[in-house]
Length: 334
Figure 1 (tube, rainbow, N blue to C red):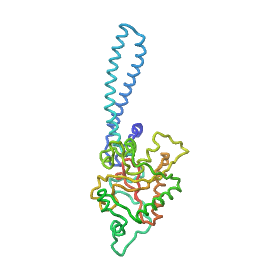
Figure 2 (figure 1 turned 180 degrees about the horizontal axis):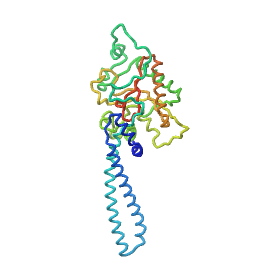
Figure 3 (figure 1 turned 90 degrees about the horizontal axis):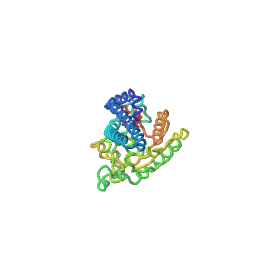
Figure 4 (figure 1 turned 135 degrees about the vertical axis):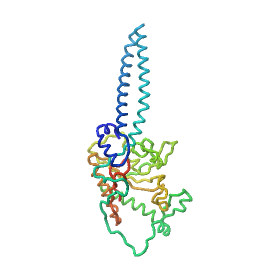
């Protein structure tokens, strides 16, 4: 979070923290920030004094020069002390600021966890069977579409082979997603699946040790494997400034995604729901902040269009504030 935004919107941030059931000492951050700005002001004043004195000392001679040099030695010592204080303070502030989640939007339901999520609507008729249906993994294995046993031999648990019609079905689904998003000017893109740590950091995905536990990291190369293609699409325009007329800038990215699933032992471990590797089409849009809510609803509408095109019964759920991710302002699940 931008410290300037925090200074100007203290109550909004505190309200957002309370709604998301997150505990961060905002007052401590503001106090440290005030101290940091004061140290910065003093440091800059001493540097200016040093620069000015440097020019004057060159013109001096004898005792006068000795006196000024002694004074500058003292200034240099004070400057070194202040710089050391700044160097110690800056990471403390950054660490605390990183704990502040994105404030939820006003229409996000109140609540602590998934039990408080709100069903917005349902579509289609829920299928009913006159028999006990088999699980998808049982059907997949019987029809030679999914093979997790051989994948476990080759790669370990939580991997799978998609075979025969399942492999063809994946490409058909990807093409369907690109066809539907293309009509709304989403640019198809296949992004890199490895990104520098500074990019992963800037996207808000390695703020905590728990976040890092979910990522695959190659320390020697300083590269992360993406867990979703948004992690490499978001930083694509880093250090660029958009012209308003060029927005929204929309992308539909297809990539393989990698997740350690470190915190989900015992959850869906038999099938291919919580695997370490999977493929996904991700919609991503850069737009004006005041149009972001409408853009979000467009993304949701396209997801629903995909589900309806497949004739799948579904429900739209608006996640409560306590159940949405730290970088998220609002989340809908289908």
